[in-house]
Image (cartoon, rainbow, N blue to C red):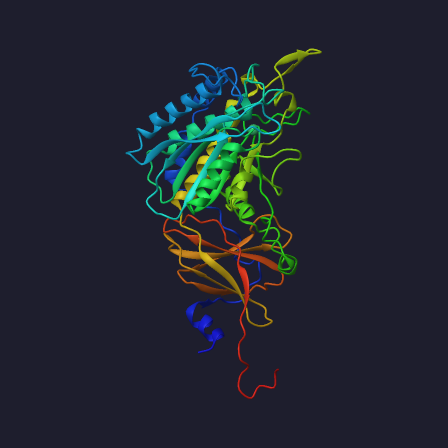
Length: 460
Ligand SMILES: [Zn+2]
């Protein structure tokens, strides 16, 4: 049996249909378990936690290093640990809370070395090989990121996200997931992504299977400084292909828009409206805003390339990295009165829906390949078995479309052919669980297979 016949017999060859006919992307199933988790998110508790963080006066990385339980970044850290410990007590021993501590040496931009710690709560899943991260940073910065003395409320940047991570952990701690979920509150973000960098490198050294990172940073308001207002939209920033993976083949096969971060962004955009009605993700296909950065970069740099940034839809720069003051009648500063609890709750629910769909759903198919055997009018894909998959689905979209447009379930097989030309579409494969949950789609690596011509053929 030659390679082509093997493919035909091992998989399914589906009847020819035009790209759109009968292949519209199905609306994701609404899993009642996920809906129940999302319903636990409480706007009042989010606001109360954010206000509690603000009450530490400053969370500057150079605030007082003496043990001060009520003031400064170290008091805030201890408060976050206490919250996670209370949450872990509800998890049946599956959640552990740890400090990731390190000494950050003095840099040209900092006054001295400083010992810092990120707070990491890990909710263990029942399968190895799958880790999903929801992250935030708890340090903050007013006009001067090394001045630990001033009032730096940091309500939106980034008390909003710490509150969301805590609330998500509260909502999810009792549920048993397939994947392990890490709830992370990093320090040292404002001065150079120190905390996330230290933690991501540790994960890389352990070869930890981090499959997705939703890094939340500035998620508490939908009203921009220019008056723009969209309370039902959030932005997700996703990088293009990671450095080191870009070569001439990218141009040849047109894979530049199918990095792991973009597939994760597409997944979150698809799942969100199912659990947060009317709320949508605006996918921004770049790593971050201009002149800015975030903790997702630390994960990317450590080799975990499915890492995206979640940020409010419009920002108000009068309320970020500003000393609290009134100037010409205008209030500056990152104060809690500018945090919109209802909006923050929507973003927190989006996180819970996406992380729960990942960790309750099937693992993504492995080693996905597009088989290039000869010039033709169809597309053959193959992959390896995924945990918790009851079947698989081929998805595709026009090369200039941002989101998957078409899908076809192909059953519990490891190779399948769809009668759509690979020349004109981008393809992916995703797993389907018995309950109908989908994994993130995996972009196929094109592989060329050489088949000997039939005997007596005049073809070269
Ligand atoms: Zn920030």
